[in-house]
Image 1: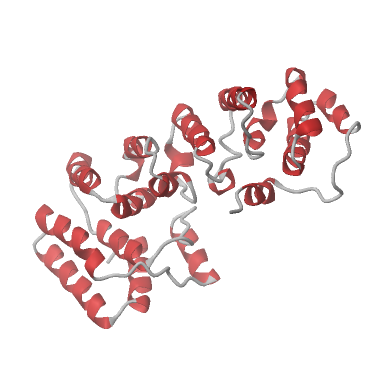
Image 2 (image 1 turned 90 degrees about the horizontal axis):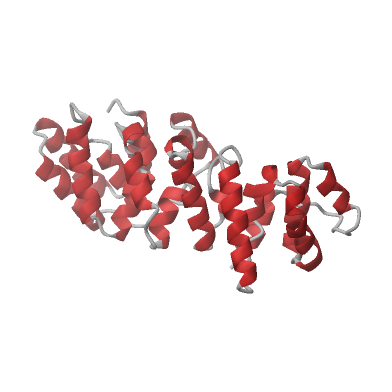
Length: 287
């Protein structure tokens, strides 16, 4: 078992599953390695649900750190035992070419139920040809199934590392549209860009025109690109916004490094406690 991620997952599965269940997985692993075939690979993947529960993985801080060391950004905090077993099995797959690899995985994606899709997308950073699977991530974020979208967009290092700005911007915009927590998108600040800011500010204007709310998290993405022309937006947030929107405006102005906008803060009173973006995100997505 040469793959560090696969070895690590096996340890977790072994610790948190019955001996009978682990024996079954060992048998399937031996059969596949002795005589690999796509048919047996598909069959085992589809039958894992019969043997492994959806009990959340019991994870210590040390275990979470080990995952991070094995694969930067790998976040297991929301994984369950079945997902770990499926991912372990996916990492069995090894082919001589990407085309062969893609053929096998494409069939799995095409036939997977929602729960299986969550695993397939969560595993994107771990695949053998991970850097060539961007098309899958782009396809996946088109879904309207929240759990599948979250598997790609949230707590996953893959989008930030491999998506183009265009695909990234669309993903973030859709996350806002679907009411998903932006603070759980990895490297959100690093991937901020001018076109994204323009799109999101336009989106905010459309929401306001329709008398609909705008998540305070949106301004995190626009902050570095605020200029004097955005003064009406800042004034609206500070004068009419909720307490969290005012906190977001405060942070956005500071990150914009625009002196004209910063002078506006002197005209408004803000709570003594200044929140960071993570806290604003968490408070914006309660309930």
